[in-house]
Image 1 (cartoon, rainbow, N blue to C red):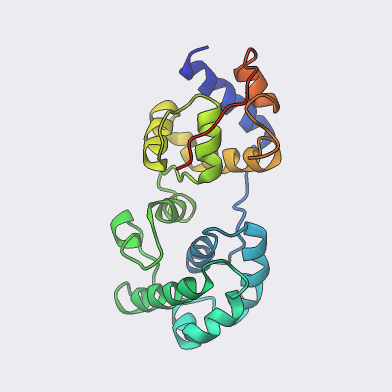
Image 2: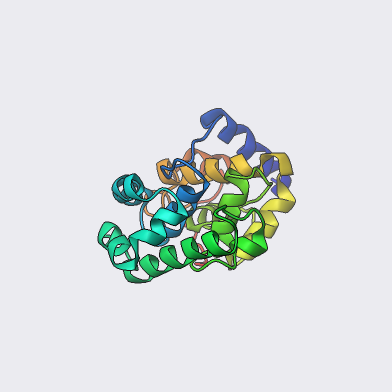
Length: 217
């Protein structure tokens, strides 16, 4: 089966399973989504949603977050990994949004990636989900599944992103990255599937007998 044929099957099946995938991080506006995505690094969406429920009640704008201050931000998120650094980053990015971007979350990759704690993946999420700019954020779930499904041989997320963009129509990118994440969490998990167990892996590689070893990003 050619790579393009696998891509067609994946798109068809994921559109059946997840026709309108929701954003898994709870938020009320562009700023709270940005904060939630920054906090989600090396943390589960479930835990982030649990903690931001209280945080966003008191600080749902960059101005309120600046007024809260680093130490109080930390108190809300201290159960997360890297909470010390995340507290500082949330405070500093909020301050920059207030002072440099006129209280508005910026709408370009360059400006977003200039914010503390915001890398290319986080910027891609904001560009796709807030501003509807075609983007393909690649996290560890997407990187793992892209390898298992023979969509990339890249050993880093940048190469995986490039390969996926070449394979799938640009009109599908913003939805597809969420669909792959949901499938990876529900069916093709890191431990639950080894490249031979879930329906997608069996469909794409019916003759695969041995465990598929993914390259970590």
